Image (cartoon, one colour):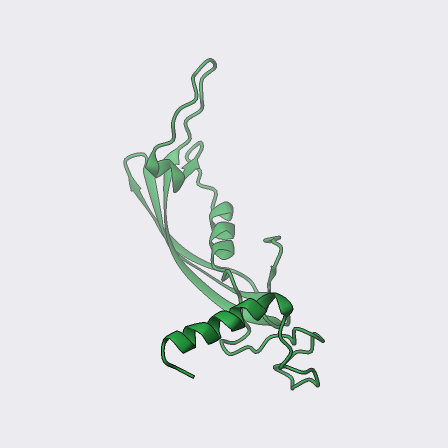
Length: 157
C-alpha cells in the first residue's frame, strides 16, 4: 500500500521486471503499471489516471561505515543508486518510488479543463457562471497598460 498525499491507488499495482547480475551489481529493468485517482489541479475534481512507467535501477551491495570513518563524498552514481543487504533486494521501495514518480506535477482531468471561476468557484467544465468575466484584478492592471503600450510601439491597435 502506498500512502501519499495527492493520490490514491485505485486498483492493484502491476510489476514486471527482470534482474541481471553483473559482478556484485544487480540491474533491475521493467515497468510498473497502476491506476491512480488524482485531483485535477484546475477544477479540483477527482479522476482516474492510468500510469505505466518503465524503469532501470542499479543495486549495489550495502557498505556499512566503520566506526571512526570520515564522511565520504557522494559520487555521481550514488545519487541514482539503490542498495541491497545480505543478497536480498527489497522491491517494495522501488515499486513505491516508481508509482510516486509517475504522478504528473500538474494533473489535469483532461487537457482542456476550464477550471474554476476565480470569483465564485463554480466548475466551468459543468457550465458557465453568472460572474462578470470582464472584471480585472487590480494587481494586474499594470500589465494591461504595458500591453497597450507594447501594441502601440509595434504599430498595432
